[in-house]
Image (cartoon, rainbow, N blue to C red):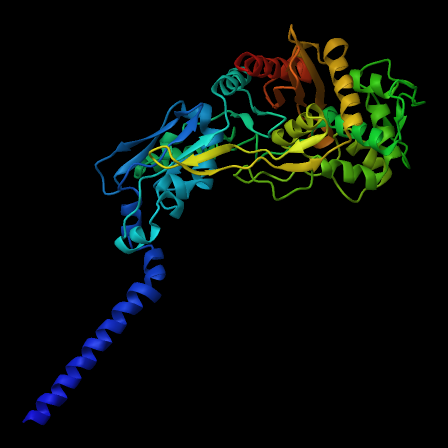
Length: 486
């Protein structure tokens, strides 16, 4: 009898061991699979059980949380949602996250191990610390000036602090309220479908994700390349350029929008935006050196993060000479985001050094203690200091006595460049109006801001489209706000 009891005990012990092995398998080896199973609602319930951390502008939250009383308890709310949507993105219980909400999701949701001194405790207890905050580099005054300036027109504004790379403003228009997407149910689904079907594409972040032909604003890159390569040694010397200019290897004549460009110097070509002169100079610089110069400014870089990813701005690496001529004036296949063109202006303003743009200054715990700070880094030198100084002078002439007079600010030194970019089949589309600029308070040691503005309003009269009339006043308003706030 004792023998049978012993065998029964062995069998029970074996069953207990098997149970423990199965528990270990489920809790350790299979945990990730079960956690990722769409049928498992517990991760989503836990994610929204506590309020999400905030995104800050000038130290004040532009986001919040609302207790919905539903299973997914806390929904995201936004302060001035359309104003800050290109910065914050959305956090939706139905459609996920975007932009800073996505890039800093681990901190905001309380999942980042750095939020706790004892992350293993939260792992074992299946708990999480309170969501942390993400402090952005955006300044409210500049953001509001850019948003008002666009006034609902299709376009974008990007503003940088040249010496640090901080993104001071990031506006895309038309915009939308990300709070419409925060919860669940038919209302959120209808808003999502409506926004995605809107032909104006309000959810597109034009400042980071849309690329445009930069038009004549790209002539700053071409002029810097010519000076660095020694192709132009005297910016005031005549260039012996005919008007119109025959594109190399073709019978096509490249005209100018205005007069007075025949045999103009490079300084005059930048000031009055002469296509003929700058196209010829680009050909003289040559494909290899033009590609190298463009890439020093950030073109052809598919890895830029701010921390959200940024669309690649492109300058072709394989072109015929006539295509190179057009690319050198920002046409053909040359494409750029507004952020990229703000980087061009910032490199000139910062003595030729291009700083890495960034949108998040630091992240903190819910009590304000630091988690991590974004390091200020350099992307390299876009041009020599001597070339940068000469380019500053040329850009100041554009504003003081050239095509960019609408950007002038009393009591400040402003350098700029207009652009009118053709596009569409046979250039039939309404041209995009560009303006890039930088501003320095009189007596200040360095410029306070660099800005790029593009206006693509399809409702505008083609005859009224120009960088000076449509884009320069917006840039001026942003620069004035930067100079006022110091």
